[in-house]
Image 1 (cartoon, rainbow over the protein chains, first blue to last red):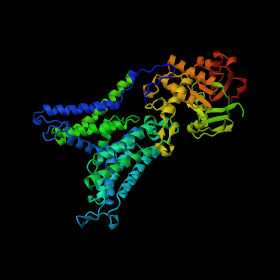
Image 2 (image 1 turned 135 degrees about the horizontal axis):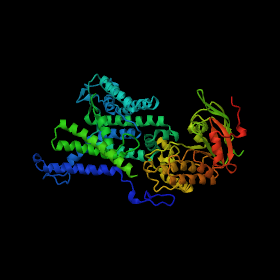
Image 3 (image 1 turned 135 degrees about the vertical axis):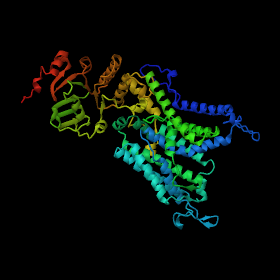
Image 4 (image 1 turned 90 degrees about the vertical axis):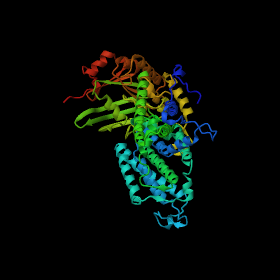
Length: 360
Length: 258
């Protein structure tokens, strides 16, 4: 990929005019945000010269405050998995609001297939099914979850592709349906006590491992495969994609199926990490996932954005959240500040685009 | 094999009571460049829409490459080898030049991966450069997205699509209507290279100089009918205008007015 400077018809390509990748802007923003929190730690009188990023404890000789970094990345990993799916939905020109409640519904269903028979020698008090569903191999709950996700995603996609109702409406409906399923599954009772092998899926830093693995896979898919190219093409100009022979309807169904399967997988990891499933799980996750994508430069009008951007967006999201706690900002104000940051991210992106359009 | 690439017999299109196109008999030889002229609403675009399958004809026959055809949509026409450059460009703004050229017919490898098969960027880029060089299209950087290109460059990319894929017939609907002088010249150059390559073309245009410059034959439409079939050598601008406005009608196309 060294020969990016291609011109035809004898025209030379000016390497200086090479497009500045959007991802770099987000990376710079990430560094600036970290620096701001670092500075606030020094400046705010009640902070006692704490450091946001670096280790200041005498007992350890590490450079960075590893505990904080670990928490940041662990916090964003599970929503980040959802954001990977949401990213490709938004690039295709759609939106998916159903992912949060889908996490709740999937967690409830999946956990019911992952229960262990004996808890500390006593029968499982939270058993959903009969004895046949105890101590099943770990693959069964995962597969059940992915099938459920694919099913919900297929309905989303089919509604959007074939009835042509706006994605906002279709997935808003699914939002309520999924939350309903989550509550109806056990009439609001939490489902707990998973098998050991199931609990291992989300133990410790495992969510981060899954997030990175899936991010790499989806980066490759979006960038180097036919599926990715067609997703960008549909979001960029749906008519052109159709005229070029792309089966737009089938592709949209696939996009929503994959998004929902990722949300379902996130539910598996989350319920495994928490060792329990509750019907209220995943509240606000759909919005946080969209926010990560948008902060990462994914354009809500479709056609633009990348997995790398979303991963960086997720990091920005995590750093801001952690930073607010670090400077001891009240949780009530944290939500408000987060909202303001998401709006400014979109405004900045829009301004950047318009400036770019004027230049050319 | 005959040397006729496209023939229409009695092609007719009615929109409700409006007779947009009546009994159009038209032939196009291989390698021939034909212009379709006429006033707004004369039936030019309607004629093209029937050929490219954008609309379904009321009656008549279309014979393409020796076979009677019924295109269900523009995609069918494209698969059969008819490439159309539309007035509204069908390009994906956020993709670069090779992506647009190969949209819907990408070169891939590891095809066993199904929808997730990999794109052969290298080969597509090489073909794109070859195709653009062939048609003498000037684009500074083919890795730029279409969004960052001028109207002329966009139009050139749209036309280069047809040149790259050796279509059997190219149809251009007012390809230079929205372009500046230099950009128009560039598009006209591409049309000339198509002519040299022996690729047949139907050009819809209002630009008399352009038509006289580029094509072998001029078909004039008026009020839904073909009223003239003029060889370029036997006519001039004034003559064509007379047909367009209705001052003259080719005796061969005279119909009894009711």
